[in-house]
Amino acid sequence: MPHTRSAKKNLRKSEKRRAQNRAALRDITLLVKTVKNSDKTSAEELQKQYNAVASKIDKAGAKRTMHANKAARLKSQLSKILNKKIAGK
Image (cartoon, rainbow, N blue to C red; front, side, top):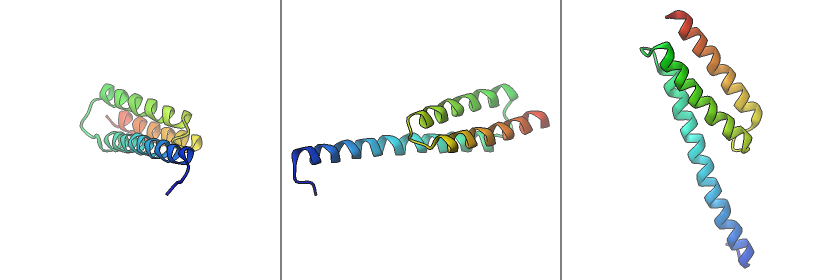
């Protein structure tokens, strides 16, 4: 446990940031699963879902919650899946 006031404050800040980061990453994984597993939705709905996920991924990459290269890779993978599903319909 921290002893000084500044160390205690830093511990509080890091716990709060960790909770926010974990929540953001959890939201992203849930949204990615919805895009990957959506079979019966229309092309417009798929595009809306992809746009929402891409926005969250971009924000996480910009804030360094997620590594920028991972964010770009994930968006690329999702766009490939989206294009296949739209072409298949």
